[in-house]
Image 1 (cartoon, rainbow, N blue to C red):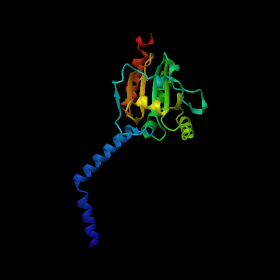
Image 2 (image 1 turned 90 degrees about the vertical axis):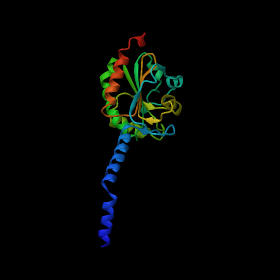
Image 3 (image 1 turned 120 degrees about the vertical axis):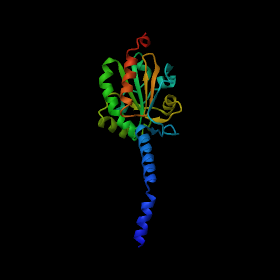
Image 4 (image 1 turned 180 degrees about the vertical axis):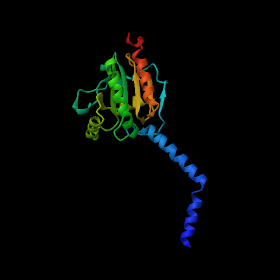
Length: 211
């Protein structure tokens, strides 16, 4: 008899309305989880869905971003973005523990293979601690067969790039004269890759920025 009451209570609890509401909530959580993660360096605020923004268009990269020498993976020559002056850059902020970053990386590898010979430089900058994450980042680069430059963004560089939006991944399409032409926040497997390609094509064909 007690079992029947318990089963009846469970049936009442899982009413059609509760089931629908639960599915909607789970769907929303999944959607946000796919798009972006909160970076723990700098301190996270709130997660945002994948999006692209033209607000940063024509804004020059700050001096701290251009001139800071950043640790490179496998003990390579330090990364300094000012060395890429005259080239189109895709600067990507990411972390090994971030699911959307891991899903985005194969797309970045493909973009590098497609556009590197046309003048695109991709620089992946982890927001993790460069000492604590050294092994995991090196393993990540090998596992995903990353052929572009990878290193670590110091806190001040990450903050200057994020401009108050600390979710990752974030990607910045930078023109030959150092302007941020497009800023992408988060990753959507259907929307982000074609948007990145379009932004890269526009930056590469921008003859004004190469003068």
